[in-house]
Image (cartoon, rainbow, N blue to C red; front, side):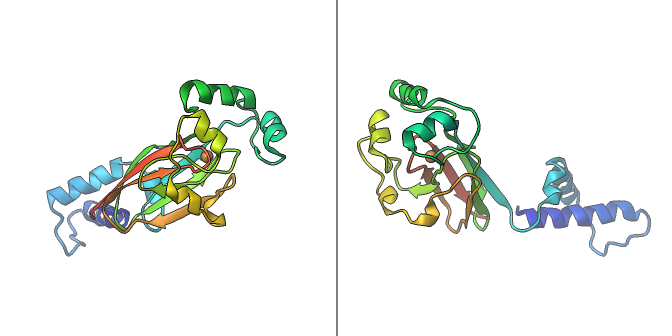
Length: 200
Ligand SMILES: [Cu+2]
């Protein structure tokens, strides 16, 4: 059920509930509709504040330490405060082939056709949120090597400027097909998410 439809039911059911003996609602409200309305209301009042099409946000996080990352990779590479020092970052990658602070949250999303998928960068570095057929390496050979990825995802070799999300930036797309889609960062290829899009 889309958000707009849920809201309509909540409002309709609410009007009926408060009408008392004066039946101001011309349409009788079935118990199942009321149950839907109640579950929609129980889903949280925060939902009611949202306007426009229903959207699902994946947040891009990292844990870069500005002092050491900027010294190693150039001024402006990392704009957050505190975090994982660059030498520690490389050690962790070599040991674990990923580093948890650099991740997409949530990493699994289920949504419906017509809804918006939004990616928002809340980290201190630039990331991409790139749809790929298969997860693979990215555009930084040293990072691919550190995590043992030898196949570069072809989609990562065809990025445009708009695909690079600076800290604070967002992208969004409306999902049009029922599918399971894979998304990864083309800089830090262990940052991954799977998105299941269902029929309406
Ligand atoms: Cu990244």
